[in-house]
Length: 79
Image (cartoon, rainbow, N blue to C red; front, side, top):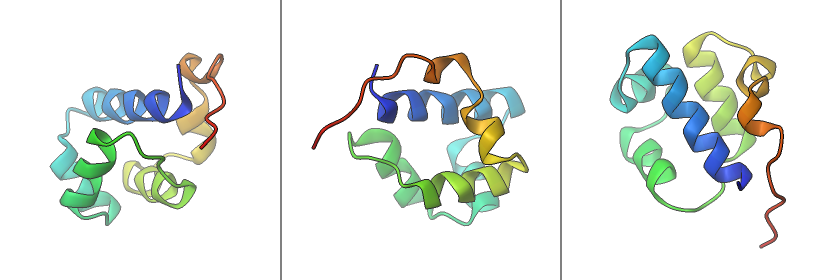
């Protein structure tokens, strides 16, 4: 699995665990809904700054975000 796909899955998982929508995540993280929706749909990389904003909105550390089995065997993405 590519890291971009793993990151999207992790974001969805965190939202599901907290019973919030992507719209609510955009509000609490300060990312516009259109930007977040675009990141989740397109196969473009998500920046570390965006992940940090998501973590801040969810009140977790970036370590908490990446401390998940899904990131154990990700493939390197070469663009």
